[in-house]
Image 1 (spheres, rainbow, N blue to C red):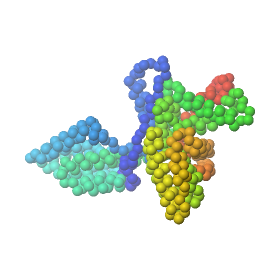
Image 2: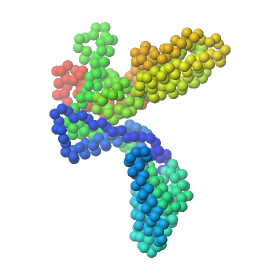
Image 3: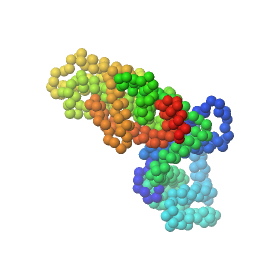
Image 4: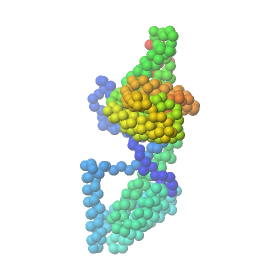
Length: 485
């Protein structure tokens, strides 16, 4: 990444998710040729990588090494230590044995060349001149190799090519005197620089990928289906459930519901409801729609955030209802209470027992802060019965059918649905009063959710269309629509 002064993306956390293998339909061959499997794996890998680059603005590669407490990590450490110990022994002999050092210098030269851009003509020529391997071998044969001089040139070249975040590493290299330690650190820093270069290339290509992303993903996904002869069974089931829910909602709103509810159901409404279902997906349900697999981790994370926001808004609503505006409107009261609620709720979504414990703790914190606020204003203490009732109502929020939690959940759902229906270009709908205290976080979540949904619908629209026609149109019309394509 020559001379760019951006932050090295290699220090940013980003894991590349894998597209889960689609199940083969019943009756498909039990085995496949190795070349077909490799081609399919390569196709899935390319699709996952391209999708991640497009939808994840913070995407980057980062150097990975096995955990030190793993078998792989221990073996790697032993092998590396043996290699560098062997090099140390060679350089300590009299005269020094530079056979391994020459091989390392050749690898360093190759790594430096990989960091050069086409415009680095002079630098490339200088690199070939200084690290002339034939000349270096002659110097070794005549006992004239100056390893410190070559190391200094290598460090200076690295300094001219690295990103600013690597400057401290370069300064540390200049302070090293032991040749073995110096070579080891040079290789480590060069590895970081190569990662920086890869991330710089990814960011440079990202605008071009965005222009071609929809067609590319659509084509690659079709290739995966063609190679597996797989149907979109899970996607069909997902859309069928959403269509059924939407039909029930249409009948509930109609004064004279028709026996056949498929007619008035809107495909757009079905898709909106289907995407909303992904935010509440059972993590143990493996029948995730094939068309959303690459975004499953992102959607699961958003769903967990949504649960926490619903609980937080529910606690705030109960507190406001019991304490009245005199306490709740005090300057700094909500600002102090919210971080405490969020901290106690963090990580409590995975198990029911953890959520119950978190809500008990939240009840105690709320009562403490309410009591302190009332006392600070010189007001009369709230009745013990009222405080006990508030604590009890907060502790009951663990139940999914809790009326307050259900109310807040429905309002949040309505807000997110309105955001999806409005599209990415329209401004956010107005928040209900009960959600305004978590409005900023909810709007941010809705924007992230909407971005994922918009891209997914654009890519997979042609895959959804025939399924929705079969679900929403009478059999004769659905077949006619298919034939007219």
